Amino acid sequence: MGDILGSYDVLGAFWLTIRLAFFGALGALVLGTVVAVMRVSPVAVLRLLGTSYVNVFRNVPLTLMMVLSVLGVTYIMGLPLSQDVQQNAIRWAIVVLSVYHAAFVCEALRSGVNTVPAGQAEAARAVGLTFGQSMVNVILPQAFRGSVAPLGSVLIALIKNTTVAAVIGTADAAGLMQEVIENETGSFSVFAIFAIGFVILTLPLGLLFTHLSRRLAVKR
Amino acid sequence: MTEPLVVLKDVNKHFGDLHVLRDINLSIGAGEVVVVIGPSGSGKSTLCRTINRLETFETGSITIDGKTLPEEGKELAQLRADVGMVFQSFNLFAHKTILDNVTLGPIKARKTPKAQAEKRAMELLERVGVAHQAQKFPAQLSGGQQQRVAIARSLAMDPKVMLFDEPTSALDPEMINEVLDVMVELAKEGMTMVVVTHEMGFARKAANRVVFMADGQIVEEQAPEAFFTAPKSDRAKDFLGKILTH
Image 1 (cartoon, chains in turn blue, yellow):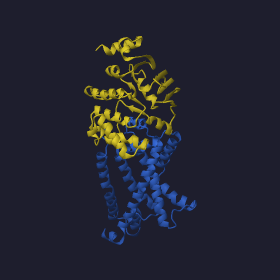
Image 2 (cartoon, each protein chain N blue to C red):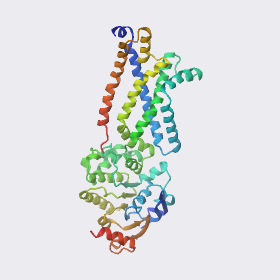
Image 3 (spheres, each protein chain N blue to C red):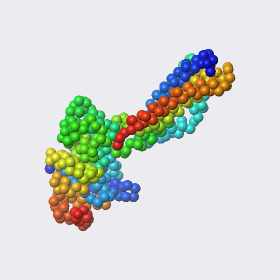
Image 4 (spheres, one colour):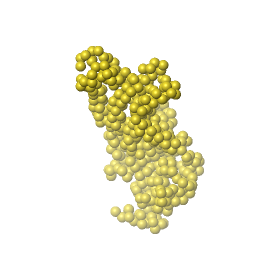
C-alpha cells in the first residue's frame, strides 16, 4: 500500500475528483434551480421544457453522455472546450456532471417546493410580489430548507459519479485507479485506498447534511 | 359617497360543475365597511379572493378604483399591492422575522428604501401591539399575534382596500377580540374593508352594510341592525335562526 501511495500521485488524483465534484455541484445547483422554477412556473411552455429536461437527462446513462461529449461533441462536431486533451476532458466532465445532476437537483427542489404551504405563495402574491419576486424571496428559500436532505443525497451521488469521467480519460481518482491496476496489480489494497478516499469525502458530507436538514428546517 | 372603489359586475365562476359565484353585482364605496356572511359553501370566501384575483373568474368584470383587474403579470402584481389581504390561516412568511414579514412588500413591490420601510413597519407593529416581538419568527407567536402582524403587513402597503377572509376563524376564542379590536380601529379610521366573517358583534359594531350570500348568490344587502333584527329573505331568516339561538 505504501508503494502505491509513494509512487503515484493519489492525493493529486483525489484533488481533481474534488474539483470535478465542486464545479459539477455548483453547475448542477444553478441549472437545477432554473429547471425547477420552470417546472412550477405558470407558463405551460416553460413547464413542458422543464419536464422534458428532467425526463431526458434523468434517463440517459451518465457514461453515454460522457462519451458523447468527447467523441461526439468535441471530435465529430468540433467543439472542444480546450485545445489541451486533458483540460478538454475535465471541462466536458464538469459540464456533463452539471447537466446530468441538474435533473436530480430539480426533482429534490420540487419536493422541497411541495413542503411550502400554498398560503405562502398566496400571501406573497397578495402583497404585490411578481412571480419571480415571490419565488426568490418566499418560495425558494423555504424550498431549499425543505430539501436539504435529498440535495445531500444528490451531492454524494455526484461525488461518486465523478468516477465515470475516467471513461473520457480524466486523471481523477478512478482514472488513477485504472492506471495503478494496469501497471501493478488489482490487489485488495489498491481497492481499499480508493474506497477509503471516497468514504472520507462523502461520509462527513452525509452527516453534515443530516445536521443541516434539522437545523435549517422552517418551523411552522 | 363618491364613485365606488370596488365594483363587481355580473361575475360568474365555476369549480368544475359547481357554480360558486352567480351573477355577482356589488359596489363598495371608499371608506365603506362591508361584511359578507353566509353558510359555508355559499361562495363568500371565493368572492373575497376573486377581488384580488387569487381566484380567477369566467365572465363579468371587477374594477378597483376605476381600473379593470388585469389577467396576469406585472400589472396584476401592482394592483394587488393596492389591495390588502388578511387570510384565515395568517400565512406569515415562515422563514422571515416579524419585521421582515412587514417590510418585504414595501421593499420589493414599492421599492421603498429599507430604513424607511423598517421605520414604518415598527410604527405599524406598535399600533397592532406586537412591536416587542419584531425579531421573532412567526411560529414563536400566538395565533392572535400572528394575525395582527398579518394586518400590519397589509397596512404597510398603504392599501386602498383591505380584504379579510375569515380572519378570526382559526383563532382560539380568547384571541378573537384582540384581532377584532384592531379591525374596528381600522374601520373607524375610514379604511375600506370587505370582511368575510361569522362575528356578528363586529358586523354590528363596525359594518356599514351586511351582504348575505347563499349558494353563490347575493341574497340580501342591508344595514347590519336591520339585517340582524328583520331579515327579508327566508334563507337569511333560516341562517340567522341557526346561529343566533345559542
